[in-house]
Image 1 (cartoon, rainbow, N blue to C red):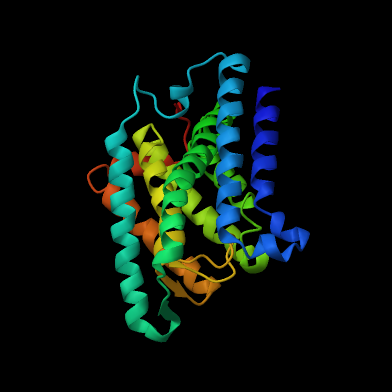
Image 2: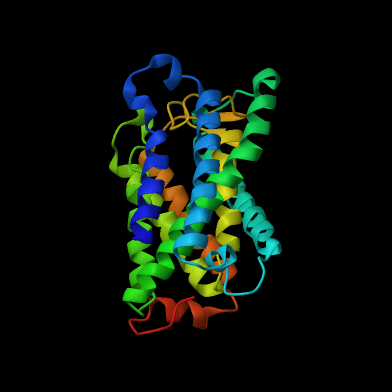
Length: 273
């Protein structure tokens, strides 16, 4: 019952981001309003999910973050910095390949408010999604199957389903699904390898901040964001960049822990968090 309640909460919250389907042009084009809406929705979700964890499951909320007794904040910082450097490098490469697809759109008068809202909103939004998908659901599916690859693939697919409306113009698109499943597999792999979601949270938060503040795409889920740089939408290019970033991150994080990486994808039983 607790799982059904938690799933319902997440579905309702993620559905609020599809408000653009109401054809209310003033809302669909107001990126600041949409970011604020996300802040309110996910903050409320955190509160109710905490109550669900405490009163329904009777367990510590920290147990959804890590198998340790405390949260490792350094891992969050490491994940954020690593992802920023990877995305920055790939952006530079893509720019050198096709410089005409990038345009500087920095506007100090609008960027300041966006910066403040984003620094509040996206740590809450991204960390909640990690707690739910890589913490709660991954542990839950792990109770049904002790093979690490099963909860990894299951939660990554559900993560992708939750983002199918992230396409340009807030319409259904298979490209955001593919892109999100890829990053979901990467974040899930990191979570299983480190027995905690801290690094995954850092990566997820930075990924969203980068896509809103640094390089955005017109017509994205939050509308025409007044970011520093805008680039034309290229679904295949986005998928390529996400896949490349995910592979690079996995290689770096598991460079000296290849045995853990092999264990995750080996078809054998194993105990999860």
